[in-house]
Amino acid sequence: MSPKTNSNIWVPTNNNFDLIRLLLASLVIVSHSYPLFAGSDDPWQAYGSLHNIGQLCVMAFFVVSGLLVTRSATRSRSLLSYAISRVYRLIPGAFVCALWMVFFLGLAFTTLSLGDYLLNGRIWSFLGRNTLLMSIQYDLPGVFKDNVYAGAVNGSLWSLKIEIKMYLIFGLLVFGLRLLPRLLPYLKHILLVFALVLLAQIYIPGMFFSFDPGGKGLSLWGYGYYFAAGAVLFAWSDLIARNLSVALALALGTAFLVHTPFYDFALRLSLPYLVYCFAFSQIAVLRKSRGLPDISYGIYIYGFPVQQGLSALYAQSLGFWTLTALSLLITVLLAIFSWYAIEHPSLTRKRQGEELILAQVRKFKAKILPQS
Image 1: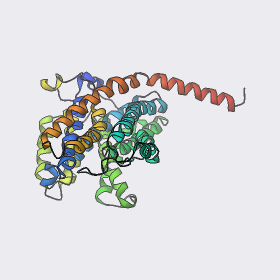
Image 2: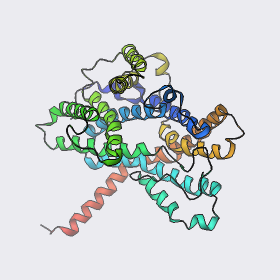
Image 3: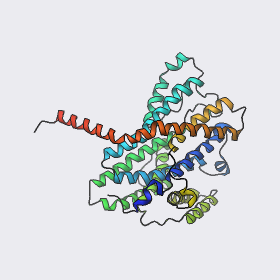
Image 4: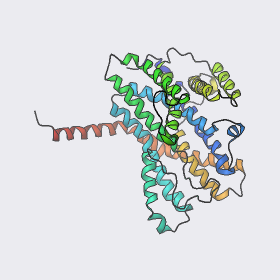
Protein backbone atom coordinates (compact mmCIF):
# COMPACT_ATOMS: atom_id res chain seq x y z
CA MET A 1 0.00 0.00 0.00
CA SER A 2 3.01 2.30 0.12
CA PRO A 3 4.43 4.28 -2.77
CA LYS A 4 6.89 2.30 -4.84
CA THR A 5 10.27 2.69 -3.19
CA ASN A 6 13.45 0.70 -2.93
CA SER A 7 12.62 -1.14 0.27
CA ASN A 8 16.27 -1.99 0.98
CA ILE A 9 17.14 1.62 1.79
CA TRP A 10 14.68 1.63 4.66
CA VAL A 11 16.43 -1.20 6.53
CA PRO A 12 18.30 0.46 9.46
CA THR A 13 21.59 -1.15 8.44
CA ASN A 14 21.28 0.54 5.03
CA ASN A 15 20.60 4.11 6.14
CA ASN A 16 21.82 6.73 8.59
CA PHE A 17 18.65 7.73 10.43
CA ASP A 18 19.94 6.59 13.82
CA LEU A 19 23.15 8.58 13.36
CA ILE A 20 21.21 11.66 12.26
CA ARG A 21 19.00 11.53 15.34
CA LEU A 22 22.02 11.01 17.60
CA LEU A 23 23.83 14.02 16.12
CA LEU A 24 20.72 16.22 16.25
CA ALA A 25 19.94 15.36 19.89
CA SER A 26 23.55 16.06 20.89
CA LEU A 27 23.57 19.39 19.04
CA VAL A 28 20.40 20.40 20.88
CA ILE A 29 22.33 20.02 24.14
CA VAL A 30 25.19 22.17 22.81
CA SER A 31 22.71 24.80 21.64
CA HIS A 32 20.93 24.81 25.00
CA SER A 33 24.24 25.31 26.82
CA TYR A 34 24.31 28.94 25.78
CA PRO A 35 21.04 30.08 27.42
CA LEU A 36 21.31 27.60 30.32
CA PHE A 37 24.94 28.20 31.30
CA ALA A 38 25.78 31.61 29.85
CA GLY A 39 22.40 33.31 29.52
CA SER A 40 23.06 34.10 25.86
CA ASP A 41 21.96 33.12 22.36
CA ASP A 42 23.84 30.34 20.63
CA PRO A 43 26.35 31.44 17.94
CA TRP A 44 24.05 30.94 14.95
CA GLN A 45 21.24 32.96 16.48
CA ALA A 46 23.70 35.57 17.71
CA TYR A 47 24.95 35.83 14.11
CA GLY A 48 21.46 36.89 13.10
CA SER A 49 19.57 33.71 12.25
CA LEU A 50 15.82 33.53 12.87
CA HIS A 51 16.45 30.12 14.41
CA ASN A 52 19.03 28.86 16.86
CA ILE A 53 20.91 25.60 16.31
CA GLY A 54 18.53 23.69 18.59
CA GLN A 55 15.51 24.81 16.59
CA LEU A 56 17.20 23.81 13.33
CA CYS A 57 17.82 20.38 14.86
CA VAL A 58 14.15 20.10 15.81
CA MET A 59 13.17 20.94 12.23
CA ALA A 60 15.48 18.20 10.99
CA PHE A 61 13.97 15.80 13.56
CA PHE A 62 10.55 16.51 12.07
CA VAL A 63 11.82 15.73 8.57
CA VAL A 64 13.11 12.37 9.83
CA SER A 65 9.77 11.68 11.55
CA GLY A 66 7.85 12.65 8.43
CA LEU A 67 9.88 10.18 6.37
CA LEU A 68 9.71 7.27 8.79
CA VAL A 69 6.32 7.72 10.41
CA THR A 70 4.51 8.21 7.10
CA ARG A 71 6.15 5.04 5.85
CA SER A 72 5.02 3.28 9.03
CA ALA A 73 1.45 4.46 8.42
CA THR A 74 1.46 3.01 4.91
CA ARG A 75 2.76 -0.35 6.15
CA SER A 76 1.09 -0.85 9.54
CA ARG A 77 -1.48 -3.63 9.80
CA SER A 78 -4.09 -1.27 11.19
CA LEU A 79 -4.61 2.17 12.66
CA LEU A 80 -4.48 0.53 16.09
CA SER A 81 -1.09 -1.01 15.31
CA TYR A 82 0.19 2.34 14.07
CA ALA A 83 -1.06 4.15 17.20
CA ILE A 84 0.36 1.53 19.57
CA SER A 85 3.77 1.76 17.90
CA ARG A 86 3.83 5.49 18.55
CA VAL A 87 2.65 5.10 22.15
CA TYR A 88 5.16 2.38 22.98
CA ARG A 89 7.97 4.45 21.44
CA LEU A 90 7.27 7.65 23.37
CA ILE A 91 5.28 7.13 26.56
CA PRO A 92 7.31 4.62 28.64
CA GLY A 93 10.52 6.62 28.29
CA ALA A 94 8.69 9.88 28.99
CA PHE A 95 7.05 8.39 32.10
CA VAL A 96 10.35 7.23 33.62
CA CYS A 97 11.99 10.55 32.78
CA ALA A 98 9.10 12.40 34.44
CA LEU A 99 9.47 10.21 37.55
CA TRP A 100 13.18 11.00 37.62
CA MET A 101 12.54 14.73 37.30
CA VAL A 102 9.89 14.78 40.02
CA PHE A 103 11.46 12.47 42.60
CA PHE A 104 15.18 12.89 41.95
CA LEU A 105 15.82 16.35 40.55
CA GLY A 106 12.79 17.87 42.23
CA LEU A 107 13.62 16.55 45.68
CA ALA A 108 17.29 17.43 45.25
CA PHE A 109 16.81 21.02 44.11
CA THR A 110 13.49 22.30 45.46
CA THR A 111 13.63 25.16 47.91
CA LEU A 112 10.46 23.87 49.62
CA SER A 113 10.38 21.51 52.55
CA LEU A 114 9.95 17.82 51.78
CA GLY A 115 6.34 17.84 52.96
CA ASP A 116 5.39 20.99 51.11
CA TYR A 117 6.94 19.68 47.91
CA LEU A 118 5.28 16.26 48.03
CA LEU A 119 1.89 17.74 48.90
CA ASN A 120 2.02 20.29 46.11
CA GLY A 121 -0.39 19.35 43.34
CA ARG A 122 1.98 20.73 40.70
CA ILE A 123 4.30 17.73 41.02
CA TRP A 124 1.46 15.33 40.19
CA SER A 125 0.22 17.39 37.27
CA PHE A 126 3.84 17.57 36.05
CA LEU A 127 4.07 13.79 36.18
CA GLY A 128 0.84 13.25 34.27
CA ARG A 129 1.22 15.97 31.67
CA ASN A 130 4.87 15.22 30.89
CA THR A 131 4.11 11.53 30.51
CA LEU A 132 1.27 12.01 28.03
CA LEU A 133 3.20 14.83 26.28
CA MET A 134 0.10 16.60 24.98
CA SER A 135 0.02 19.47 27.49
CA ILE A 136 3.51 20.09 28.78
CA GLN A 137 4.25 21.53 32.24
CA TYR A 138 7.72 23.01 32.49
CA ASP A 139 8.08 23.90 36.17
CA LEU A 140 8.23 22.05 39.48
CA PRO A 141 7.58 23.83 42.80
CA GLY A 142 10.70 25.63 44.00
CA VAL A 143 13.00 23.93 41.47
CA PHE A 144 15.71 25.83 39.56
CA LYS A 145 14.22 29.20 40.53
CA ASP A 146 17.68 30.80 40.85
CA ASN A 147 19.24 29.26 37.76
CA VAL A 148 20.69 31.29 34.89
CA TYR A 149 17.63 30.11 32.94
CA ALA A 150 15.16 30.21 35.79
CA GLY A 151 12.20 27.93 36.39
CA ALA A 152 12.08 25.45 33.51
CA VAL A 153 12.92 21.86 34.40
CA ASN A 154 12.63 20.43 30.89
CA GLY A 155 12.22 22.98 28.15
CA SER A 156 12.80 20.46 25.36
CA LEU A 157 9.44 18.71 25.60
CA TRP A 158 7.48 21.33 23.64
CA SER A 159 8.42 19.75 20.31
CA LEU A 160 7.08 16.32 21.29
CA LYS A 161 3.58 17.78 21.64
CA ILE A 162 3.77 19.05 18.06
CA GLU A 163 5.22 15.77 16.86
CA ILE A 164 2.37 13.76 18.38
CA LYS A 165 -0.14 16.02 16.62
CA MET A 166 1.65 15.31 13.34
CA TYR A 167 1.42 11.57 14.06
CA LEU A 168 -2.33 11.96 14.45
CA ILE A 169 -2.87 14.17 11.40
CA PHE A 170 -0.75 12.18 8.97
CA GLY A 171 -1.81 8.83 10.40
CA LEU A 172 -5.47 9.66 9.94
CA LEU A 173 -4.78 10.99 6.45
CA VAL A 174 -3.00 7.83 5.33
CA PHE A 175 -5.44 5.42 6.94
CA GLY A 176 -8.36 7.39 5.60
CA LEU A 177 -6.99 6.85 2.10
CA ARG A 178 -6.35 3.19 2.84
CA LEU A 179 -10.09 2.85 3.37
CA LEU A 180 -10.59 4.33 -0.11
CA PRO A 181 -8.46 2.12 -2.38
CA ARG A 182 -9.29 4.14 -5.47
CA LEU A 183 -7.71 7.24 -3.92
CA LEU A 184 -4.70 5.52 -2.33
CA PRO A 185 -2.57 5.70 -5.52
CA TYR A 186 -2.88 9.49 -5.24
CA LEU A 187 -1.39 9.58 -1.73
CA LYS A 188 1.85 11.15 -2.89
CA HIS A 189 -0.04 13.87 -4.77
CA ILE A 190 -2.23 14.61 -1.74
CA LEU A 191 0.82 14.84 0.53
CA LEU A 192 2.53 17.20 -1.91
CA VAL A 193 -0.53 19.46 -2.11
CA PHE A 194 -0.81 19.44 1.69
CA ALA A 195 2.84 20.49 2.09
CA LEU A 196 2.46 23.23 -0.52
CA VAL A 197 -0.66 24.55 1.22
CA LEU A 198 1.26 24.73 4.50
CA LEU A 199 4.14 26.50 2.80
CA ALA A 200 1.81 29.06 1.24
CA GLN A 201 -0.04 29.51 4.53
CA ILE A 202 3.17 30.28 6.39
CA TYR A 203 4.04 33.16 4.08
CA ILE A 204 0.52 34.35 3.29
CA PRO A 205 -1.35 34.13 6.63
CA GLY A 206 -5.04 33.43 6.24
CA MET A 207 -4.72 32.29 2.64
CA PHE A 208 -6.38 28.94 3.34
CA PHE A 209 -7.22 29.00 7.06
CA SER A 210 -6.62 31.15 10.13
CA PHE A 211 -4.07 30.37 12.78
CA ASP A 212 -5.19 30.55 16.38
CA PRO A 213 -4.24 33.60 18.49
CA GLY A 214 -0.97 33.73 20.36
CA GLY A 215 1.13 32.16 17.66
CA LYS A 216 0.42 28.55 18.65
CA GLY A 217 -0.90 27.66 15.23
CA LEU A 218 2.10 29.31 13.61
CA SER A 219 4.41 27.23 15.79
CA LEU A 220 2.45 24.04 15.09
CA TRP A 221 2.40 24.42 11.32
CA GLY A 222 5.72 26.22 11.07
CA TYR A 223 7.42 23.13 12.48
CA GLY A 224 4.77 20.73 11.18
CA TYR A 225 5.69 21.79 7.66
CA TYR A 226 8.99 19.93 8.06
CA PHE A 227 7.10 16.77 8.98
CA ALA A 228 5.01 17.27 5.83
CA ALA A 229 8.20 17.78 3.81
CA GLY A 230 9.53 14.47 5.14
CA ALA A 231 6.26 12.76 4.22
CA VAL A 232 6.54 14.13 0.68
CA LEU A 233 10.14 12.96 0.37
CA PHE A 234 9.06 9.46 1.40
CA ALA A 235 6.13 9.40 -1.00
CA TRP A 236 8.24 10.61 -3.95
CA SER A 237 11.48 8.86 -3.01
CA ASP A 238 11.40 6.70 -6.14
CA LEU A 239 11.60 9.88 -8.25
CA ILE A 240 13.69 12.31 -6.17
CA ALA A 241 17.41 11.85 -6.81
CA ARG A 242 19.72 11.83 -3.81
CA ASN A 243 22.94 13.80 -4.18
CA LEU A 244 24.65 14.74 -0.94
CA SER A 245 27.06 17.15 -2.64
CA VAL A 246 24.16 19.10 -4.14
CA ALA A 247 22.34 19.04 -0.79
CA LEU A 248 25.39 20.43 1.02
CA ALA A 249 25.80 23.14 -1.61
CA LEU A 250 22.16 24.17 -1.21
CA ALA A 251 22.54 24.22 2.58
CA LEU A 252 25.65 26.40 2.28
CA GLY A 253 23.81 28.72 -0.07
CA THR A 254 20.97 28.95 2.45
CA ALA A 255 23.44 29.89 5.19
CA PHE A 256 24.65 32.82 3.07
CA LEU A 257 21.06 34.08 2.95
CA VAL A 258 20.76 34.30 6.74
CA HIS A 259 20.56 38.09 6.77
CA THR A 260 18.06 38.29 3.91
CA PRO A 261 14.27 37.88 3.76
CA PHE A 262 14.78 34.73 1.67
CA TYR A 263 16.53 32.72 4.38
CA ASP A 264 13.51 31.03 5.93
CA PHE A 265 12.03 30.02 2.58
CA ALA A 266 15.36 28.65 1.36
CA LEU A 267 15.74 26.75 4.62
CA ARG A 268 12.35 25.09 4.17
CA LEU A 269 13.53 23.70 0.84
CA SER A 270 17.19 22.91 1.54
CA LEU A 271 17.02 21.41 5.04
CA PRO A 272 14.58 18.57 4.19
CA TYR A 273 16.62 17.69 1.11
CA LEU A 274 19.86 17.68 3.13
CA VAL A 275 18.35 15.30 5.71
CA TYR A 276 16.97 13.10 2.92
CA CYS A 277 20.33 12.82 1.14
CA PHE A 278 22.35 12.38 4.32
CA ALA A 279 20.00 9.65 5.54
CA PHE A 280 20.67 7.42 2.55
CA SER A 281 24.29 8.33 1.84
CA GLN A 282 26.58 5.33 1.49
CA ILE A 283 29.81 7.12 2.40
CA ALA A 284 32.05 4.57 4.13
CA VAL A 285 32.45 6.54 7.36
CA LEU A 286 28.68 6.76 7.72
CA ARG A 287 28.20 3.04 7.07
CA LYS A 288 30.58 2.25 9.93
CA SER A 289 28.34 4.07 12.40
CA ARG A 290 25.30 1.88 11.71
CA GLY A 291 24.01 -0.61 14.24
CA LEU A 292 24.39 1.63 17.28
CA PRO A 293 21.54 1.67 19.84
CA ASP A 294 19.01 4.41 19.17
CA ILE A 295 19.61 6.53 22.27
CA SER A 296 18.59 9.83 20.64
CA TYR A 297 15.19 10.01 22.36
CA GLY A 298 16.80 9.57 25.75
CA ILE A 299 19.37 12.26 24.97
CA TYR A 300 16.60 14.62 23.92
CA ILE A 301 14.36 14.18 26.97
CA TYR A 302 17.14 14.02 29.60
CA GLY A 303 19.49 16.68 28.22
CA PHE A 304 17.73 19.84 29.39
CA PRO A 305 17.08 18.74 33.02
CA VAL A 306 20.65 17.43 33.31
CA GLN A 307 21.92 20.81 32.15
CA GLN A 308 19.67 22.64 34.61
CA GLY A 309 20.96 20.48 37.45
CA LEU A 310 24.56 21.18 36.50
CA SER A 311 23.76 24.87 36.13
CA ALA A 312 22.29 24.98 39.64
CA LEU A 313 25.39 23.32 41.08
CA TYR A 314 28.31 24.60 39.04
CA ALA A 315 27.33 27.57 36.86
CA GLN A 316 29.55 29.84 38.94
CA SER A 317 32.50 27.49 39.32
CA LEU A 318 32.93 25.51 36.09
CA GLY A 319 33.56 26.82 32.62
CA PHE A 320 31.09 26.74 29.75
CA TRP A 321 32.69 23.91 27.80
CA THR A 322 33.31 21.82 30.92
CA LEU A 323 29.62 22.08 31.78
CA THR A 324 28.66 21.22 28.20
CA ALA A 325 30.93 18.17 28.14
CA LEU A 326 29.60 16.99 31.51
CA SER A 327 26.05 17.49 30.24
CA LEU A 328 26.70 15.30 27.20
CA LEU A 329 28.42 12.61 29.25
CA ILE A 330 25.73 12.34 31.93
CA THR A 331 22.91 12.59 29.42
CA VAL A 332 24.37 9.85 27.21
CA LEU A 333 24.67 7.55 30.23
CA LEU A 334 21.05 8.20 31.19
CA ALA A 335 19.98 7.71 27.56
CA ILE A 336 21.79 4.36 27.37
CA PHE A 337 19.97 3.27 30.52
CA SER A 338 16.66 4.49 29.11
CA TRP A 339 17.18 2.58 25.85
CA TYR A 340 18.19 -0.75 27.37
CA ALA A 341 15.98 -0.68 30.47
CA ILE A 342 12.86 1.12 29.20
CA GLU A 343 12.56 1.93 25.50
CA HIS A 344 13.86 -1.21 23.79
CA PRO A 345 11.98 -3.64 26.10
CA SER A 346 8.83 -1.59 25.53
CA LEU A 347 9.20 -1.75 21.75
CA THR A 348 9.59 -5.52 21.86
CA ARG A 349 6.25 -5.78 23.68
CA LYS A 350 4.16 -3.57 21.41
CA ARG A 351 2.74 -6.55 19.51
CA GLN A 352 1.60 -8.06 22.82
CA GLY A 353 0.00 -4.74 23.74
CA GLU A 354 -1.87 -4.66 20.45
CA GLU A 355 -3.20 -8.20 20.93
CA LEU A 356 -4.27 -7.37 24.49
CA ILE A 357 -6.19 -4.29 23.36
CA LEU A 358 -7.84 -6.22 20.53
CA ALA A 359 -8.90 -8.91 22.98
CA GLN A 360 -10.48 -6.29 25.25
CA VAL A 361 -12.27 -4.73 22.27
CA ARG A 362 -13.70 -8.13 21.30
CA LYS A 363 -14.90 -8.71 24.87
CA PHE A 364 -16.54 -5.28 24.92
CA LYS A 365 -18.29 -5.92 21.63
CA ALA A 366 -19.50 -9.27 22.89
CA LYS A 367 -21.10 -7.61 25.90
CA ILE A 368 -22.87 -4.77 24.13
CA LEU A 369 -23.86 -6.45 20.87
CA PRO A 370 -26.72 -8.93 20.82
CA GLN A 371 -25.74 -12.53 20.15
CA SER A 372 -26.58 -13.64 16.61
